[in-house]
Image (cartoon, rainbow, N blue to C red):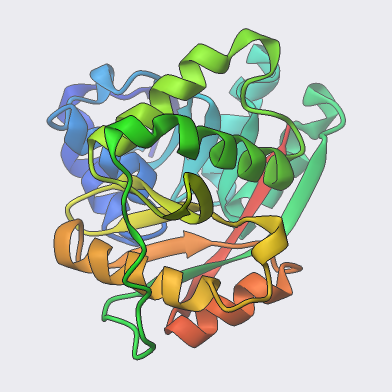
Length: 278
């Protein structure tokens, strides 16, 4: 049976959907992009490669701002790695299920160079029911006229989490537009007091089967004062009611306060992610 790496076509959508269905929460980002373009893989806005064996796409790799492997085995990763070594470093991170990401990185690191950081253990958490904890009634959708209040909190969270400002290198306009888009689509929630965001979270990737929370942040001077659990309970309740039947997120294993919060809210382990920051 011959196997090859090739660009994905619109006709490959059923095969890719089958791969997504192996973990709708874990593959939420790719599912969201596919559904946004009606399943036409050529219109997703980034390169999409398939590992074709016997005329069936058995694994995939997506190359945008993030490089994302999907349902890869040893043979598929070896084939993708051979091509990636020719293209050189791509994107700002390699992210996905840990066993796939870490093995793929092992294969391409000699050609791609030293990463900024490898986060090898990021629990993937999911919840499909409202939390039993009380919700914070002050957590609500951010209004369009509150963009300038939310934006500094988003920049602070991103910089704290990734170690690089999202507006560095002249990217302020692009990042501002992205945050504005989340507000416009009803996917940015916050508790705002006297014009200042004290808790916030966004719903990033959204598919018909799952959505993914991102950017959870409490203003530093308010940490440890009981905002996170009721805030997250409110976000989960909103997402389940209005967005998707399963809510997911992934978190660094060393972030003990966040993991404790998510466990209290009712999230359950659903796998392990890893991220290589390039």
